[in-house]
Image (cartoon, rainbow, N blue to C red):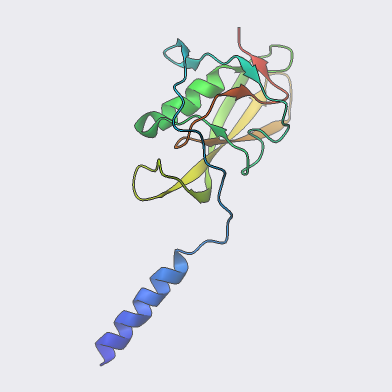
Length: 148
């Protein structure tokens, strides 16, 4: 009897610890294929008008890629330059914001990756949210240009 009670308590604890109150991120298109400028850089031709694109967990940049997801995140960031063509550097800050996706590597959930982006000559630290599971046509976020 004690064993059954203990089992029920453990299962209940595990189920409640996996719950999340975060809202789901909008889903991407059915895996858009991205063109490469070179092996480490995406060719991007569109510029975002939406000021939340990439800056909000509700509107992340969807680079897709599955197993190539981390490389696709780098390919996207490598394409960016500052507003006047300045060099940018970036560093992954971690993951956040769980969401449901049909493109997950395991199960039906993914997380966003947060990157700190610094524009050369500026002390401002910009956080961009990237989704490596879903993909859509890539755009340059407001405040950035393309690397030459």
